Length: 106
Picture 1: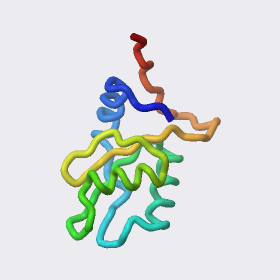
Picture 2 (picture 1 turned 180 degrees about the vertical axis):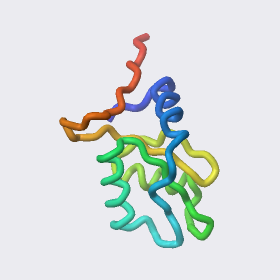
Picture 3 (picture 1 turned 30 degrees about the vertical axis):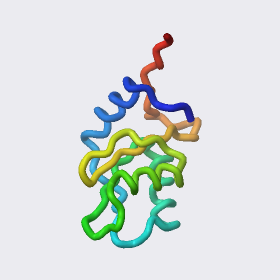
Picture 4 (picture 1 turned 90 degrees about the vertical axis):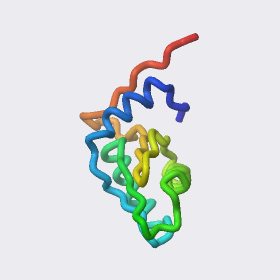
């Protein structure tokens, strides 16, 4: 997946503002169940918000970087204890796909 441009990132941040966190990272390590949950959520929604709980051993940035590598997603934003991940869906028949603004040519 190509690196997101600043305009695409801004578009995804705006879409992510209204989302509720659906993946919660707590004292458990980022294990197979959490990775599978995030992977399935990304496939269904393309854009997900995650939250790092106070009892986690990770900061939001560390958790975002680790989880994004495991599920092959882009980090859109990290603020406080929350972060947003994006990955285009592989489903061809998905009706409400996120259409990113085109990357401007230089």
